[in-house]
Image (cartoon, rainbow, N blue to C red):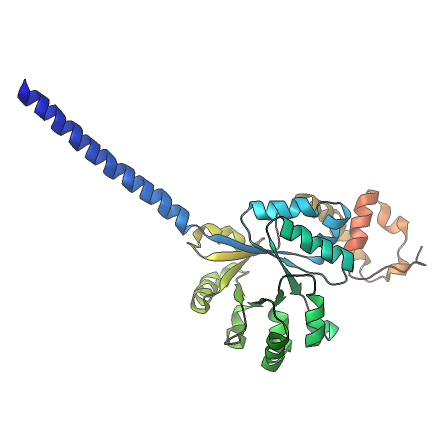
Length: 279
């Protein structure tokens, strides 16, 4: 009888030991997989998106959605966006726990000098200069920006621009890995530069689960379903009407198939401003 009890105790201890090891292994696997998951860093909001969400009073919702996906930074294209909307957008981003960084898009086409770049970023908590900047501005321009601008500078390059990255001055660098055909090489480059890996929502975003623990950005914010639903309706019209000046357009030309709110969104998205005397 005593021998049976001892055997039972030994069996129970052995079972508990095995169970503890199994649990520890399972927990390690779970924790390891969580630690290895790619880390959301930032997303871009284009000028049309900002105008749309401002006009529909959905800025707070989209910022909450972005923060809810664990992103930390939102890059904002404020070209031709009214000053009040810029302030509102940046403030709402902060309220939702995001860092608003002003994305300076195509500065070369607007012949922006360093003081004007800084002025464009006046409502953000940092500035982003991207591949357009590095293609058309000198290292001296970047150094002047770094000297005159006291807030963080986010640098974004295409893979072939690796040699243009300043040795100092970028608070954060990202590499635009937007196409599948060179994704592996781009991923290795981002690792070598200790850069954030930027994905394209219509192509390389699907690789995010394979990034290990790497931080990543997404271009653009891909979850504005209502926005993209509206845009799909007007995309054909945009291509059709692009050759016309705004004053050549009439309500009859844009009215078919679009509600008043969709027409408004379409006009907000156009890259030129209407004249008060157009209609």
